[in-house]
Length: 171
Image (cartoon, rainbow, N blue to C red):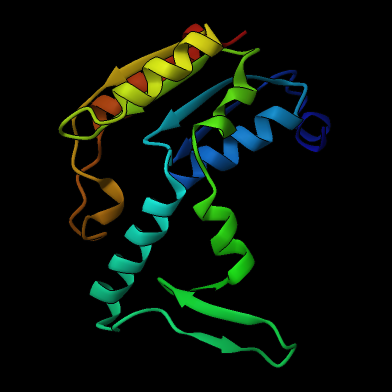
């Protein structure tokens, strides 16, 4: 509502990559103006996602594993890829599964799977039956989030697909 009031926009389209797709899904389920959502390689297995973050942390920081420490406020946090993560947050992340995306049943959804082997297709087939308005596109591309930020190649095909799809589903 804040954005609509500030910009005069009557509709909102959300786009999220990885965990951002989960955040976009939660936001879309709470916004009555959300008309379409794009999920780009969304997290479908929270436990595997947290394991992936821990692996990347160990590799990036040459640290054996994220360790919990107690903050001055008494909260236990572990630094995970430079971000503080509480035990509660990690538990919530580990609990993510396909059911979170079922809240998108009243709007068009574009699910982009950029994995080399199309591993998301089985997950989407299950979900598509429930949602009805879900389009699945497999566009192979190296994991943009794991590339050297100074050498990353822009995923033109994916960005073009997202832009075209949003134009089709815009008002």
